[in-house]
Image 1 (cartoon, helix red, strand yellow):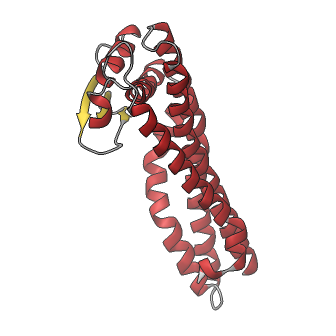
Image 2 (image 1 turned 120 degrees about the vertical axis):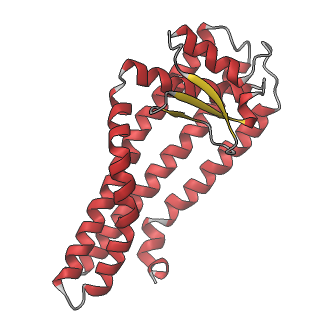
Length: 232
């Protein structure tokens, strides 16, 4: 099996360990910041609305989602959706997360190039990613007896490469949204004293998960290329 291949441990396992570390880091950082009440006493919803209004985005709605950790900006409906832990909470964690999602709405409104590319790629990459591994594994099975197998492996790698490109493009989108969030929190005086540093730690920890996801995707792509090379 693939996960018993020694090269898998060398190429992929470090990225998986990094991903677990990043997830643990963001969970602990958010939990710590969620216990700190922001001195202004504003909730995540209010922060998002203040930032949107400051940029003239009066048509972007802020809604509650029941999905745990489901905070996101939906460009199709122009809606910022915040989880219960963020929407009505006046914590520093809620402020940072809400400001970040509002930052995505500002990116969309200003035509931020990387966001436009990512949104355009999403449906194609989503489709391709669902086929990448099945095609590659089927090709791997058939490759010892048929040229068709090698073609299927190549097609699977091509689809997976699209997913890697999507992850790489996501990095500047997320870092830029966090930068916009911190500037907005400062410009609107929504954080005071050490609250800004704590909000920054929340956003940095969240960004680390995207870096880890990209590292995992790149390492898996390299491993697929190694397996393909063995069949040449």
